Image (tube, rainbow over all chains, first blue to last red; front, top):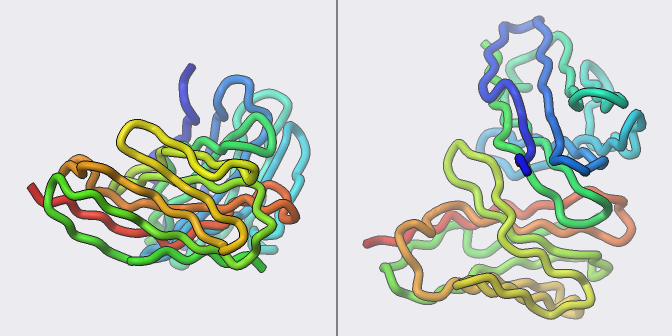
Length: 112
Length: 113
């Protein structure tokens, strides 16, 4: 059973470009979470999704950020018009229910 | 609002020493607590999960305890090894905050050979 998969592992964007981060949960997991780790800071919750539904997006910036978890395919975290402050490690986690969360290796976004 | 604090922020010990990492949380209505390990530039590896109804969990040389009334959890590492060097994170899942984990800042552990 493969773990949580994230790609790309590293992503470089120039200011104003779009960043798309992908997450494939563990097999059988229908709950997906996105967290952000800014440099020298702890992990902060961004958004929680179940298949085709956003359950809790209270940790996600209101502008430029969006997330989806379609019926087929991976979950996508999309950042439009990136700024330098978006540079961070973005981690995806999945779970079967409200229980143990398993994390992917992360996508490290660098905005030039 | 739940806050999670980890003390110390950094710890350096000689190989073979037993050690304790501390985690405290402000809201006792905790559903479960997870301990993770994070290596530099890597993702998080789940080490132990303690449900609110449990007092401790053990896996190999690791033992984690949970005391809801005092708002504390500890991670005990026995006979530490250089390979244990990493950042250890605790994260609480609250009964009232849906499914979001609230993380502490982590303890950076270095085990010297």
